[in-house]
Each structure stands twice: as C-alpha cells, then as structure tokens.
Image (cartoon, rainbow, N blue to C red; front, side, top):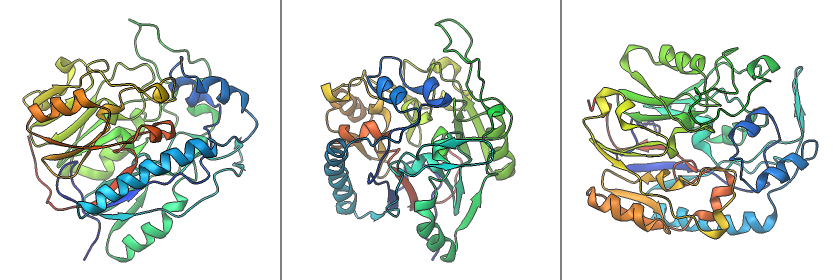
Length: 359
C-alpha cells in the first residue's frame, strides 16, 4: 500500500509527520529575517547580536515547548493518527556554498515549510532561506521509506541563493504603499507552507520566501490536473499562507481580516462560507515573538468536523462552533517561537479520501 496520499486539508487524517525541537537554533540575521520578523519583536536584538555566532533558542524554552508537543502527539495518537518523526539533527553546525555561508541551521520544527504533499507525491521545496538549505535532511529516512512504499518523491530545482535573489535595497513598505518583497525573480523559490490544498484547486500567496517563478514552477510541474490560484496578502512581513487563509472543509474557509480583503479573493472561493477570524488571544509569553500573533488560524483538521485549536483561543473556538465544527483544544503557545503552530508543525502524509474538485 502506498502510504502517501493527501489531496486537501480536511479528509480524515491517518498519518502525519510531526516536527521536533532538539538542538533548535535562532535564525541567522539575514536579508529575509530582517524583512519578515515583526519590527516590535524582542527577538530582534538577539538576532542582530548573533550575526556571526550560532545561538541556541535556550534549553528552558525548548523544554517548555517539548511538553506541549508531547501533549499534541498524544492527542493525535488518541484520535487514531499514526505519528512519524524526523531524525534528530545538530542544527548548530556552520555550512557554506561557493557563494555564501551561514553560522548554523535553524531547527526541524516545521515540516509543513519544507515539503508539499500532492496526492501520492512529496515535493521538496526550494526554500529561500540560506540557513534552511539542508533542513530536509533529517526527513530523508522517512522519505526513503515512503519512496520504497510507492510514493513519488520530487525535489524542486535546488536554488543557488546567490545575492541576486535578494533585493539589497529592500525596505518595509509604508501603509498605503505597494507591496514589495525581499526576494527577486532570479530563480524559482518557495516555501511549501505558502500553499494550501483543496483537491484540484491549490491556493498560494506571493511572500518574502515564495516568488512568482516558484509559483510558476509548481504550476508547470503539476500540469493541467490542478489549478493554482494566487491570493494577495496585505501583510508587510508576509511569510506562509496558513496564518492568512485556511480551508477547513468543503465550503468552509477561515481568513485573517487584517491580512485579506475578502473582495479580492479568487471568485471561485467567494461562494464559500467565509469566517473572519476573531482577534487572537495573546498570552504574555507569546508577546514579542518572531511570528505573527495570528497563530489562531494555524489549525489542523482531523477530519471535516474536528479541528485542533490552541487551547487559549476561546473566541476562535466559539466562532468555529458556530460554523458547525468541533474544536479540539490543545495547549501549544510555547511552540510558537519556533515558527508556527499545529499546521506548521505537521505534514499530513495520508488522509482518507480521493482527488476531487470542490468548486
């Protein structure tokens, strides 16, 4: 049996890869980091200070997040989901290419960023972060296993990540100014987390880590069997679609009212039941983190009805209930500093369902 089969974000979840936090390092203070970290983040000073020095997230922070991660894994397993884990990796080692070098990698916390599953195919993303260049390696034992079980395994063209890919003159656009991005069109790059799947229709946002060439590469690779639709986020630090636009079930969509004008959404999706996410609850220890406060959208569907939501997000859970969904609360805020929540921390390898068109 081919153990890889997933076409959307909501069919019954059967097998999932969950990230891990051992040896997690802070991101390097590089061009993309400067463009995507919220400007009021207390992490800025730490990142600036480590321009030439590998710096751990800190064992206390890692341990608090690992407690919540263990609870999340237990929840998944109690729901009958098979949980797989990548190998433990040392992210503190420096590496270089002929064009650049970094003081360390980051972590293995977010498989959703690194891989895109389309049906029975796992696609390795050509990521734009230099310090994420080898982030796929801890997953290789799993990918080899899935390949030998019948999955297709594709790697997008590995990017050079030369200086030509980054706009050295980039400055954050002021309110009212046109959107600009720190990545150019020098070569195709994308993070897999800038795509969400609705069967034959896939939605993507242009961001600081996903350029138009990367979107076009995937469009050509998938061919006429799939349709790719671009949404336009107004977030000046845009990175990853899953805090902006989240399909929940056929006909049900969760969107970020601060980052999206629903009138600009692709016409095919405007007929769906669209829920504007309530303002997020921001615990004290979540303030000033290097991620969007809108992690309340970063949910994971167990099936068309059951949705895993961070336990502190009461307004979001009540809104989802009114939509006919059943929230499954789980504490996870200590995971946020590592770059995401439930959707980011997972890669759904198998969901029980078939390829369909929902529009």
